Picture 1 (cartoon, rainbow, N blue to C red):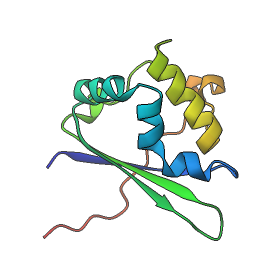
Picture 2: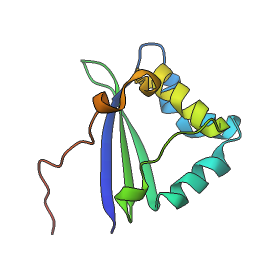
Picture 3: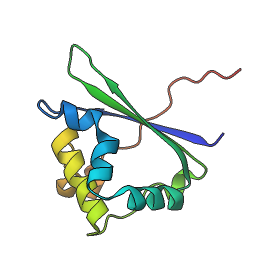
Amino acid sequence: MGTLIAVGYPVAKGQEDRARNFEKELDEQGLRGDYEELNRKGTVTRHLRYYEPTPMGDLVLDIMECEDPTKVGRAFTDSKYDQWWLDYLRDVHTLDIRNIPPEQMPSPPSVVYEWKA
């Protein structure tokens, strides 16, 4: 098993269907190949997205398993996939990283507990 990376994203009001249909939208936009290539380059071996309704607002729990976490992060380009992903983050998850200075970018979540058999 590789390294797990987990991130919780809020779901913007009115964007619930898009959050639930990530895979469908990926395919409708013709971006499946770009997504899979990005995962290969990032050593991602598994990617799960869980939809979690809560009384405080809905969340998407995004979990990736990768062999080398240092290869997951990368600079964004003006490729069709990157522009779609940046718009998706802004519209669905209220995270507009185009307008966040690098020094104010959210840090990766930290592990606060782990149990193994």
